[in-house]
Length: 301
Image (cartoon, rainbow, N blue to C red; front, side, top):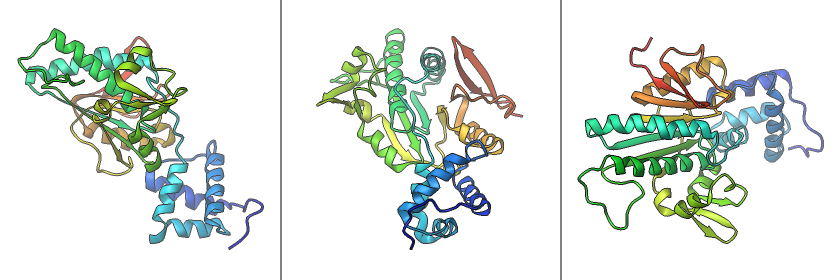
């Protein structure tokens, strides 16, 4: 083992090996514009592992004993930037247009099960935000479309017979644990208004914790988007600011997977800097008041 006082040189062949390994494991592609970020994270992990070459680190990652370190590296390559109610115009489109259309369609079929997947959920603000929006939307929809079901006491945040299944997935176990804990600082809560805080959060010291009823709606789970074992029969998928890590070939493969994971007529939400244009003809774009979504087309080509 070497005492690392200066950064060990990362050769071009070693960089290619590690780039390929990361791409094969999770689909993240680090081109020339972003290779400096990859190099920085590799230097950090090399120092932690106290290895004297990047080829030795590659051999560790590809060994049976290196699975834990590989997971740690992949966690370090994701930028967990998120906030409550991020990109509000898009969430308004989800709540006021997309959900309204889905709820009406489902009620006509007497299908009262709603399934939403937050892919790349980070520390939980996105799935909790969407769960709050769905709860509010269902309460309003229920007032206008009452059903002959007795309301339990205490009143649940999802009125029966409706059921919400919110799947929240990420490639980072550490960040998933933060989401499961549901504890946020005052700074993180800044986008959440006073009424929403009263309804869905409790003050714990100088932080806020998600109330149990809301937390019970969100199921946090590890998912690598490279795998085929992804949530199926989904009505809405949010995968925002994730595809920017992938090259075009991997983006196309991922979009095909999302099409297969969605129910007929389901919706996909991607980041404001992302687009399906030129990548697929399996979705139609919906644009409303600066919010954008993509609806699955059934006559897929």
